[in-house]
Amino acid sequence: MKESDIRNVNVLNEYLKLVEKDVKNFFDPGSFVAVKCPACSGGSFTPEFNKIGFQYVSCQKCRTLFVNPRPPFETLNKFYSDSPSTGFWVEKFFNPMAEARREKIFRPRAEYAAKIFANRENIVVGDIGAGFGLFLEELRKIMPANEYIAIEPSTDMSHICSAKGLKVKCMCLEEVSGLDGRFDVLTAFELLEHLYDPAVFLSKAFSLLKPGGHLLMTTLNGLGFDILLLWQLSKSVSPPHHLNFLNPESAQLLLEKTGFEVIETATPGSLDWDIVESRILNDSAPVDRFWKMVADKGTPAAKQELQEWIAGNKFSSHLRVLARKPS
Image 1 (cartoon, rainbow, N blue to C red):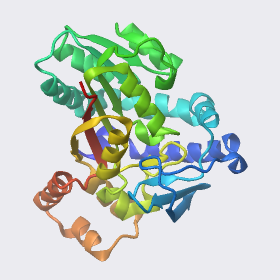
Image 2 (image 1 turned 60 degrees about the vertical axis):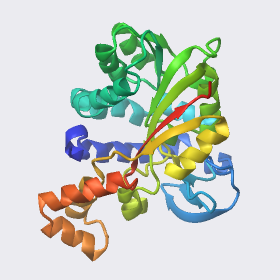
Image 3 (image 1 turned 90 degrees about the vertical axis):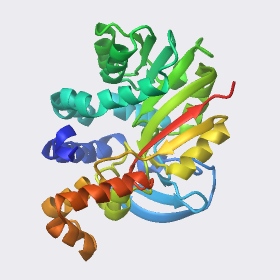
């Protein structure tokens, strides 16, 4: 898979410019709140860089990269619901690539989930931040007997999920009530990086799961290849959306602190090298001479082997975690 298969880079660049404009209108740095490490609650940080007014630091204990201080929860919610860049993202960035992303991302993700839960029938599955409902649609095709619930705060996206025959809770996960112990499986894809407080989110997910229930999530790995190499120039480091960059060890630490048993951490990414190569060739990213040589002289086979090595050794920026609520 190539980056161009799932996103139009020119549209992404336009979107990031709109975000930068919205930041000036929606955020007052004077209102930002100092926080502890979102993974381990540590209080010792190393300043890393400032990006469009947001300071990133690294936790000295668990190496989580995160924004500190950060906008209040209410300000972030208003930005997500009212900013022009959010509307642009839906209409110009996601919609045109929705079917390509279904094929390249959501269908394989559903197939992976179906293998994990193949021996379980008539279970209740909730997708947190369900968006257009693509994951639940694909999983329902494979496992039609289950009950599927989309948890999605966007009114527009909730209507889309409902039109597809999915049950919908139009609210943030933290606002869900009366469903404790209801779910056998909860999923949260590319969500933890956006949250004001991941620990609060995971505690809520823990309460909604049945004993023995599973949480499957993906997020950005702050110790991933392309993020470490490009650092503040990485387009994945995009405040105010991406506030938290956990890593395999700190994600496990956070989940265990919340009460989960971690079954697996993996980095099955396939885009790390393609992202770096694109930035070298198209944006003249100031990386080491060796990586410029790989981009220029490396054979397709060599680049594929490099990507497989990155993913297989937990160095990809795409982090997947499967956790379980103890019985």
